[in-house]
Amino acid sequence: MNAAITGCSIFFRARSYRLDSLRNRWHQWVLGQGQHLEVGGRLVLLGDHTHVVKDGGRMPGVVSLRETSETQSKPSYFRGQCWGALGLLVGSWSACFCLPLALQLHQGFQHVRETATELRLGERVARMAVDFVGMNGRACWLVLDAFFASASVFRQTQAVWLVSGRQPGVRVITRAKKNYVAYCPPPARQPGQRGRNRQYGDKLVLWEAFDHPYLFRTVEVTLYGQQESVQLMSAHLLWRPLGQYLQFVWAITSRGPILLMCDDLTVEAEVVLGLYARRVRIETLFDTLKNTLGVFRFHFWSRHLPRHSRQPTSNRTLKPPHPQHLQAVRDCWRAMESFVLCASIAAGLLQLFSLKYADSLWQRQILYLRTRSRHLPSENTVRQILAPLLAREFLHSPPRSLWWKIRDAINGDEEDEHPALASVV
Image (cartoon, rainbow, N blue to C red; front, side, top):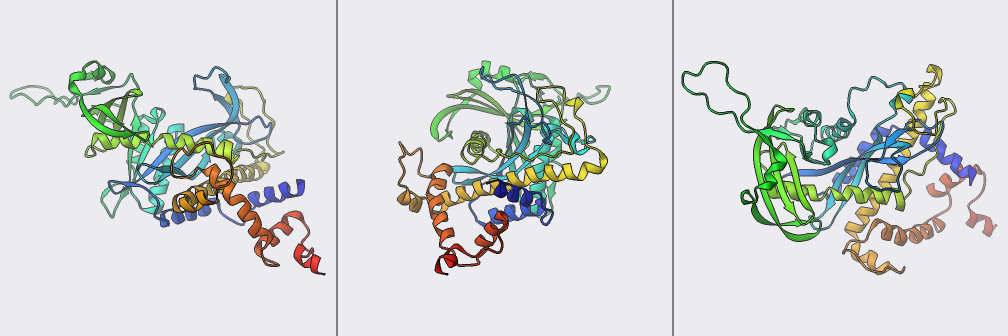
């Protein structure tokens, strides 16, 4: 077992392959499958952060994190890693998955002496979407939570334009915070009026619009897999932090009021609300990665990194390694991201199997399942079905196949014969 773990660690630390090249090939292959969901000619990307508890004393990227959920059983501060995730919505409008495209560490750069990072925490997820659009040349929606409702995120995504379509590569949909304000268009200049033209009109507290129900209209929208009547209103207003018009969407749903903002002024309010309702799929993806596949159960560390405290302390006290050991720590950082990327590819393959072969998978399902939540089998169900099939194929693989060479290289017994050949001899 120790030899297998050591062999896998060497694989993820190897420099014979480039992490960005592997990630780009994965993106191209996923788009080639034709399972992605398009809305208005744009792909739908979901972005968010997830926190992973880690208390390793010499593990890069481990920082003090604050717990923002209202769960009383969780501590207010803990030690762990902050991972930024970008997912692609695949499947159909009624039954879809959030396929993982990329997961990267977004805090703790002092451990690799990258203290001059100009991007803020929210901007780094936007940068991941911009890189995806620039590499693949496909226009996208980027659906984010209220944490990303800042002018810097909108500016980050507006920096990329597609030459072929002459349009912005990324359009952002995010939930606005309750204390946000906006401004009406400036009034027309009166004849003979002195002074410069006004840039902003009357100031509006956005959340106060819910106190005027007569302004809303009733529409039928599919939210979270159910058809329901929603009170909806939209308006184009000036948002001062960005200095331009945004579309604000007010909605009163069965789960309470919600205020959304989008930088596309031509899209309908129903589409904006429907896209944001699919953002819950990335939360389901995090649960699958953590609890079903164990993506973050790695133990990569470097003895060249100065030991840091296992108790929550200020992140300003993070100590970088000695310059001569910097490359070793960076290799450890890269090994963690490589491990998470490979595990994310495995999760994406399970989702694609579910989309393409749902009926065949249900026919092979023999384990107890209390009830089916939907027609598509979950990643855990697909894993339980495929695991014995893959094990059977590996055992009956031909002698000297790639599978047996990998196994022998990990175990360190390259001279051993195939078990089937040994039994014949």
